[in-house]
Length: 151
Image (cartoon, rainbow, N blue to C red; front, top):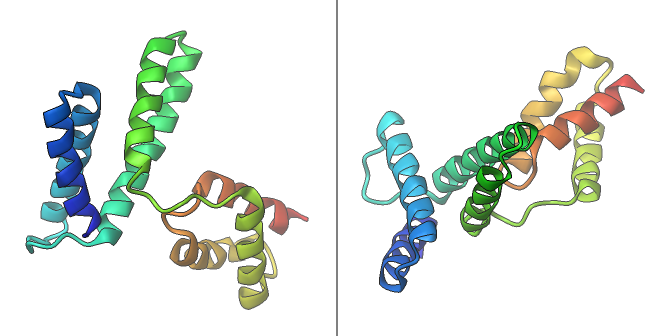
């Protein structure tokens, strides 16, 4: 079963269970995926797992940024709602790597690319995007790469 089919199945289950919060989150995710399919020119019946992961990752990233802003503004109620949405969306993402696992992968990339200065950050991030896409928070990846290049 593809991730897209799993989303559709979970949406039906949420409807049957009358779980409005989960249902609304899944509907928003499904709509974002459908929009990405249309904008990407892919109108095939099958939706790739890569596209689902890409869209879900973007949604989680956006939610995390919004949570920070809501907390700064004293709107913990809205932040808490987004935390719940992230929990629902995260089901469709691969397991996230820990900081140590990210560093280990980046060390391999550094050995492969052999950067000489901060100018090589683009090359490193390009490789990191291929290997870590959907599995790591790129805010952390960028931070680690900057630290390694700055040393």
